[in-house]
Length: 196
Ligand SMILES: Nc1nc2c(ncn2[C@@H]2O[C@H](COP(=O)(O)OP(=O)(O)O[C@H]3O[C@H](CO)[C@@H](O)[C@H](O)[C@@H]3O)[C@@H](O)[C@H]2O)c(=O)[nH]1
Ligand SMILES: [Mg+2]
Image (spheres, protein in one colour):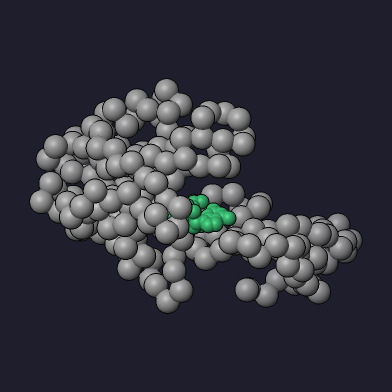
């Protein structure tokens, strides 16, 4: 943590430590007026995360995953099925690169080549402590190892979707893709003309 003269007396109370850790952070904050105030704020997180958009510049297709997401379901916006780039939480001792290669094998059943770091982002900085490392990578049919699908032992049931880049962009407009990481990475491909 960087030292900031506007903040002091930080304490953390763990409210839940089930999968990720939900903490209540109490801290003294100095406003621009010079007034100090004690503030309580919740923050949630596990490890940092990774996400990758795999694309094939020859066939102009991308590889996505489709799975049931309980937070989406209980928000009531859809049936809870979410179409996303491949990704997940970084395991202990892993680098973002090692983690993303593992996730691609587990969830999509592919080897990845030409791994490129795009940026590292907070998806919900007021609530979630996690940073997500975003990548792009290339694949061809010969990189396919198996059906992917995720780990049953971790309650994952993932369907692999291979769609044209044009179709994926349409899915954003139709509200069929609503995951921020996926939208950012598809737009990255578009802006940088990685698929023409
Ligand atoms: N979220 C969550 N996952 C849990 C929980 N308990 C067990 N899990 C299991 O932990 C695994 C997480 O799978 P990953 O592939 O590592 O993560 P993800 O669910 O695809 O991605 C989510 O987490 C990433 C890392 O925090 C995030 O980067 C991403 O945005 C997304 O929220 C899944 O098998 C999930 O069932 C829980 O209480 N909450
Ligand atoms: Mg995942």
